[in-house]
Image 1 (cartoon, one colour):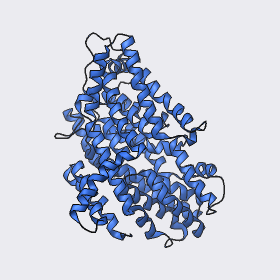
Image 2 (tube, one colour; image 1 turned 90 degrees about the vertical axis):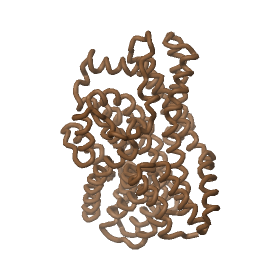
Image 3 (tube, helix red, strand yellow; image 1 turned 90 degrees about the horizontal axis):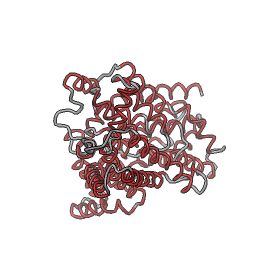
Image 4 (cartoon, helix red, strand yellow; image 1 turned 120 degrees about the vertical axis):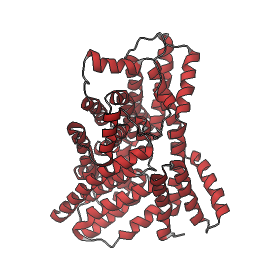
Length: 476
């Protein structure tokens, strides 16, 4: 069925209710229920049954199940590297031995640099930059909201700009379908590469993060969060609920262990190093064809296993103690995993409603001329914000954007870049996005506080990008 404008209602209710009430779980379930209510011809009992079944059905999709298990294992790794003295040793190395980080700016730059360097997968980027930098940013009174913003804004944008990862493989595949169908001509790899300079939002987002870190000139809700942290020392708003439990973040070094940064560095090396290996194996020799979700899953499992072998071999802890820390870390991630389950469930319901397709159809065939790339960008922002997925937006909008570009005789590369940038921007602002949730997790921030402080920055960057797309459209 075609549900038309009603398809916009569920994500709108979920997002507005979450921002208003700060009760994300209830808000997401409300969105799921309304979506199922529409599809069940307004039968509440059928809608309730379908909503509950939809949440359970999330686990039928392998990549989603792997992502949820990934979040639990990440909690265990975070707890273990803290108990082993790895985090304490790393902080001591940077602040006392080398004095490489000796200011608030330096602590934030550490997270920024990690986000730039680790472009292999957005989840890994967010995890490492948040976990490594958080103890330092806390000590220099950086708000958790600011750290979440840095983690989030150097993950997806960098993965889009340096597409030697699952992002690139997905985009090449989508573009390849358009080439095979005769909609556009050329090599999909070349088209993607030539679209990179036109990913205006991603470029501006990364540059703006650097600007805010270097100058310290925050504004809006972020400025208030930073002032609170600096004047009161509260890195979290009073009454805030960190998305990751303090059981996983506030772990003391095990008694008798001398802090050593290698206890953290080596497990992270295994974590990061397993990503390209996983992509190579799952891609049958071609990393660009590899499975990102499987590779991330393998990476965290390998890192967890390494922690056990390494820590027990060095007699840092016994097997019993290792398992105790494992369960403690897993327990601390229940809020994150639960939120991801609900976010994926509402994503499936919205997909069944055809929300993204309806939004795309609003402008298809109705836009012409130089405004093409700019309109495609805005549409990408709206679809990704409503659905909470950048990859889903790629799949929905890229075929339409390519058809529109050909019909309008617009710049193909600018149009492709506009799809990618718009999808990333909307995903950044959406409280139902998995990457936004993971950024809140890695920084141990209140999820809605992260969204509310990041959105104004994202809107400013998108306004600049919109103007650039208009200019590109007019100059061809």
